[in-house]
View 1: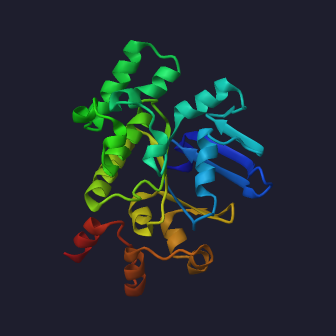
View 2: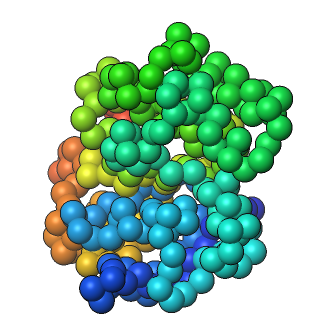
Amino acid sequence: MSEKNKQEVLRLVDAHYQYEDGNEALSGIHTQFFKNEKVAVLGNNGAGKSTFFFLCNGVFSLSTGSIFLNNHLITNSKKDLNLLRQHIGLVFQDSDVQMIGSTVYEEIGFGPMNLGYSKEEVRKRVDEVVQNLELTDYVKRAPHCLSGGEKKRVCIGDALAMDPQLLFFDEPTTGLDPKNIKLFEENLTMLENRGIGVVIATHDVDFAWRFADRILIFHEGKILADGEPYEIFTNRELLEKSGLIQPTLVQIGTKLGWKQIPKNLGEFQKMSL
């Protein structure tokens, strides 16, 4: 998609966030996110990724700076914060922190119900999400009794029921086994097909390489780099400064002098034929 045809959803301008003790967690953040965009957010622990996600969803409020949703300036009013949380979904790293419903059905319906939608509309949204995420067998179960992968799907359902434009995931594959990681990536394809932009904080550079259209690197509370995956992962000086390594396929392709580096094993196998 060309820059001209991109539809901006969220923009942060000179965003700062300070903790109560005066320490600044984020400083001078300027960035924007677009509809149907796939972004990987990288950086070492303590770089500010989670704090940044909480600001984008309205869990935290800016110390200074501005947030725009569809060119609308978001204030600290309840109306604006509800608008932000409706359109910008957030899936926490720890699923248990996020879930409050006594059943999966109640959990997924909580957000729309809290926004004042009718019972019919809430039921319609929940039923659609349950079907899309194949959660029919779980609707009457307590979400806290599910497996890690099942909990993650329920939390995705929480966000989808709000009909978001962007979905932020904070290290979503932490604690998941390979089978559930594969299911998670299949769900990402479903989100992409629905036109939902996806922003994922991760330490997995191989996943970032095969998934993302764009990479953001956070370092000491600032955005150190913002660019296309090839540009980011072939910049050795940048990777060293941010404590990152090259994805496996980039390492191989660079050493062998490939003109085009495959994004995944499927593309690699086609090259090898």
